[in-house]
Image (cartoon, rainbow, N blue to C red; front, side, top):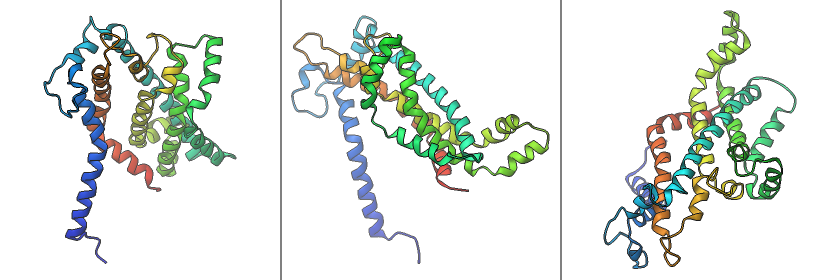
Length: 283
């Protein structure tokens, strides 16, 4: 039986693809259009701005705007906290996933199941205990106070993803390296990790996106711009006066925050697809 699609099937698949793209991209395009609207145009019911302006971007990026005290500082916090959490999660997940994927020990399946369960555990349920604990031990409103909870989001999914990659790598390659005189650590570092690089890279991007987009921990475990990330900072945007809604400024900030994610996906989409595909096939 031929696997080729008929003309009618290709047509309907094209229609479905277009509908899905419109459904997914409509909110993004709407936010983009709103970011170029003047405050007086927000309630006119127009999708596209009547007059395009960069006032909202100037408001969040100019040194004399609200960005000096809110947006730019939170942007630095998001970049630093997300990068640190990603590096720690990937390093720990690489070691843990190697042990799970390559070694035989009791409870291995239980560890993977627990990691998967933790990754889907609702973060909101532990915010209150963390809030009280962090206030008592001095981690509230600090980078470390966000990095540690972010590891609970990024580490389990990183372990689960990387374990699939290590299981695919032939055990004979590591044995051959040890026969040539390499220690277990040298065989892992020089023979196994380079082969698992696509999986490590894909896992790092996923972990970064999870940390970058977090709102619950960011809004609950910070109180000043010393550690508050961008998603939480958007909730504190205010207009030029008490009668003005900061919809345009929030939309502009959302566009700016989304740009790094879009650039990373566009630059490394082949590596992401290759890593996810490789991890989905059991060798």
